[in-house]
Image 1 (cartoon, rainbow, N blue to C red):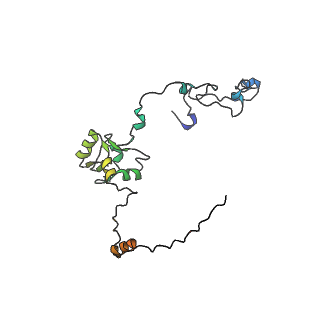
Image 2 (cartoon, one colour):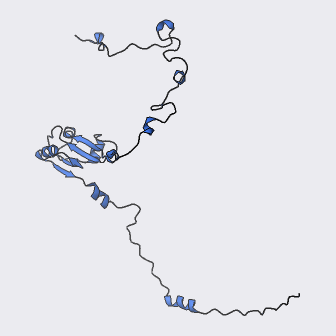
Image 3 (tube, rainbow, N blue to C red):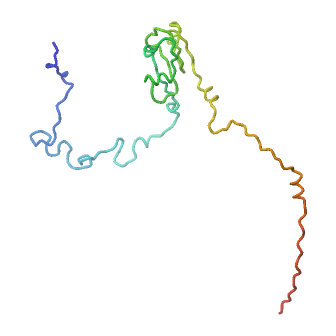
Length: 202
């Protein structure tokens, strides 16, 4: 019978510790398994992954062509039905509630409900995607499912950089005719001083 005093790890799961620098008779004396000189033999000396001694590495020699859809992949937060069992009947399960209960965390494109487990009572679930099995179980238990539309939310949300309030133009009290008269009034001409003729002597 297994007791605390006779617990042992499985044979082969633990290896003997490699003791370095304990003399020649230890089997790892002198250079301690690092060989003779060189960059790898120095303390703190290491070579980064993919380094090929200064020549053009393989990752740069290979051509890069084609399209990769991984950059446009959308990551969804997965929630199963058995994780919603702690909520009371009639609770509105949305993103805020799931974050507060630490069922989802981090950044994602949306929430997806999967049908793992069962629902004992009716819940009002609000998510971006849901499987057919999960929808059937929620509605069978007396709950409802509401799918969020991200595109409509973005369109309805007001932009911060646009001022939606209409500002009234200030009313001009001064008549415009007076301004026109001032501009059309001719200024008095200045008297030109007679220029003296100067003769150049050759």
